[in-house]
Length: 353
Image 1: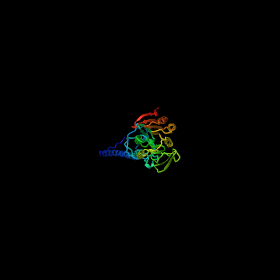
Image 2 (image 1 turned 120 degrees about the vertical axis):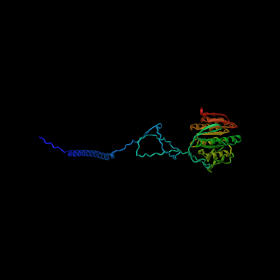
Image 3 (image 1 turned 45 degrees about the vertical axis):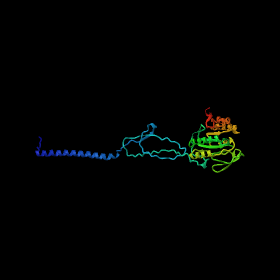
Image 4 (image 1 turned 90 degrees about the vertical axis):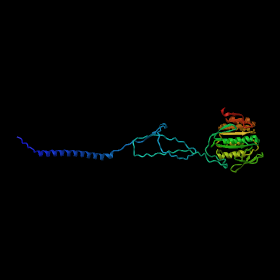
């Protein structure tokens, strides 16, 4: 037989209220525990979270794949030596990420290499013999004959037989030819009659006695005897084409006097003692020298050996035609006869044969 207690309505109501409160309390405690666990996990795991960004990767690429990058440009002049080697700028293609990063990448400033345009100090009138500056190549002409090279040597007849129209034609054309020399090229002017001298020299009184004096631009006096200065072949230097050397040369072309004699050997001896040797020799005369045949044979062969072209110009009188043609042929140069009006009457280019 079992006994059952009968609860009063008031007791039942209190139990129901207590049960509801316990349920609500349990739910709140569960929510708080979940939140607390989330906070604890976030607190401990947050420092280990890293924000990764793509690295910048560079590798060589061709110029055609170059990406355009806006960079501030700074023009700088970098002084270089005359023989500045040119350098090709390396080109790289950059792969970048679209995401932001805290890494600061410096912008490289662009440096422009400007090659020095200085060809050397200009040579004043007193420095005729100095060789300075970088050489230049190009063309000039003489009585319609085109001449190319980097080192131009004029061997010009200043003998008394040039008086009159020949003298006038020669000086005018020589001035014009020197003015057309390419800037930076090397050149020299050798005048000859019995003696041979530089345009920058002052030559003493010549009476045909075989002994003369030559005063250089530096003031040194040389004795000319038996086709030599001070007993030996005179060694001369190159000038560089600048405004000052051209202007000084023009003054001497116009002022140098005509003197006695016609000898080809002395200026050619001086020409082939030059270091370095000329690329082109412009040889002009109006008459035949007693040693013309020997000079033409000897120095024509030497010119060909050293790859020197000789442009032989006979002014008005073609008396030395055979010898001058020999010079031109042997050196792969050219020959021309000029009339009293400065026009070519005959010409031959042996460089194409």
